[in-house]
Length: 265
Image (tube, rainbow, N blue to C red; front, side, top):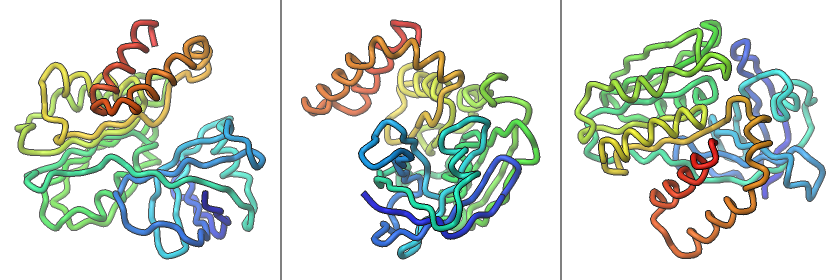
């Protein structure tokens, strides 16, 4: 684990707060959607943790953008923490791995995905045709990015906040490009992402090197977690057993998703 000391804060938009941490030994480089497992409890408390994307990493310094919402564990800490306060976290590799022969890329995400989208764009080679479809409920949370990519950005407003359903699954399903020639990266509400993955993997049979889709959060999570609790141990065993057996990651994800859907999750 690494220890991070809060050294700066900037309010980017009404619902996005940027925190800069001093982190001796922090990794530099890696994938642009690398993420952190951050622990907010007392030492040894592994229950109070959340995952956040690295927005930027420099020698001994890490930038994390926090999407703000009422009552969230991490959002509350981000709002209230004083400079000098500390957190501990574990660094984890992201999933973005665009094939070298990709002629275009489509980046799809909601408010929580904006930090990763920004970092992906900053690392995109000059001239690569890149389409971004970003969903933020309020237009005030739109961002601008620096990139050498041949960039086209489309913003969706008034949806994807957990109460109004996301439109991002439809974005993936209506992509007019030749999918075997490009790359799709998506992150957002978990069930929305799961549906898009089902479309790409099972309905189209697209090669898994052509997409990376990650669920970042759950709408109505308290209700979901209450229903998940009775099967939590079984689901953990399913995943651990699959990893121990060396199962293909995509097949293991299929098994996990199918088990959730059998119980209405």
